[in-house]
Length: 172
Image 1 (tube, one colour):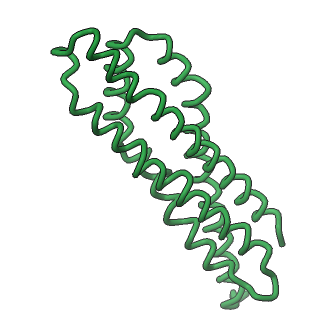
Image 2 (image 1 turned 90 degrees about the vertical axis):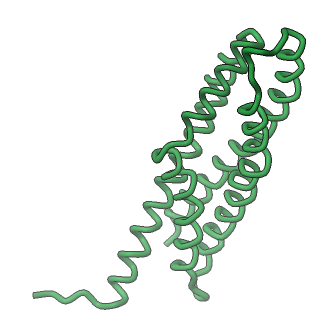
């Protein structure tokens, strides 16, 4: 019977975590990208009342376990994978993962938490059915452009983080 050495086991765990990191990073980057390519474009064609109601609904529905698996999973798995790949003699993978972690943590996670979420919360508090057309238009103006700008930042950050993780997968 072959015994697995501690080093081999470590390599297997670290590579499995790298694969998991790549997967969750790809999922969240894909979600943000697809949203940019389709949802935002479709929503932009709606009337103020319909746009705001749709965004309220989407923002409520996105808060589900599948979303949190990729959104929070990336924030947990990337740093863990980074730590497990720290090697002073072979820093390439570690550096790529470190940069991916920072890009995701700041550009995707923090932008979402400190930018998109406060806008979502402000929109969620609005009682759309009791608002006039002028009030609906004003709310859309203060929500849509800032939200989309922030979304673009987090999308680019998530995609860049994914590219860095994939590059780390290729480094030996």
